[in-house]
Length: 201
Image 1 (cartoon, one colour):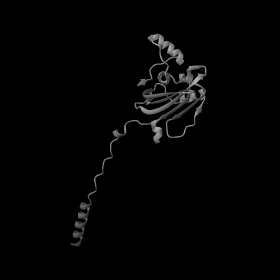
Image 2 (cartoon, rainbow, N blue to C red):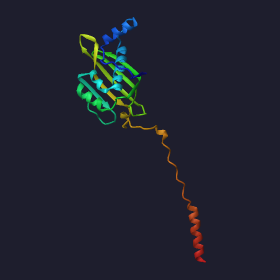
Image 3 (tube, rainbow, N blue to C red):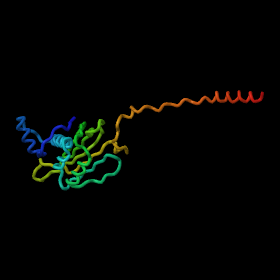
Image 4 (cartoon, rainbow, N blue to C red):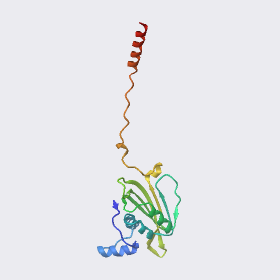
């Protein structure tokens, strides 16, 4: 699992990243879609963890984001500025994303990434399962290794079940209701008959 804990001040292009890693290891790094996706995802969640203000640099003027925390329909947000405002308003700073699965595919226009994991805000003790899809678009037709975040769809799993992710403790910790003892109707009935016999005498 990838855990958001590192950060670089600017997201390097895949080409620069390849050059640096090749120089560090002495081995020519192959730029596969998986390689680029893993490095992008680590940078993105690291920025979320450290300071969501830094996430703006990943987006462009035509970027689109949809963020679902409940089953309520959310309109897509267009453009780096509005996306930046939305992300800052979500209170994600200090939160921790644990990536359980990451799948990447190359396409004619970039790279499609699907992420499955859990996310916990800084003030929470519960990790909420989430799914997120990214599409990295090419910044220039002449450079196959420079990308920006063109599409971003995020949803907590609870959003698919019509519930908000507001759990405070696992459901099994709630004590079951205690059964009420039944009223003793026979004793009441015997007391009534005894009273009737006394009245007759």
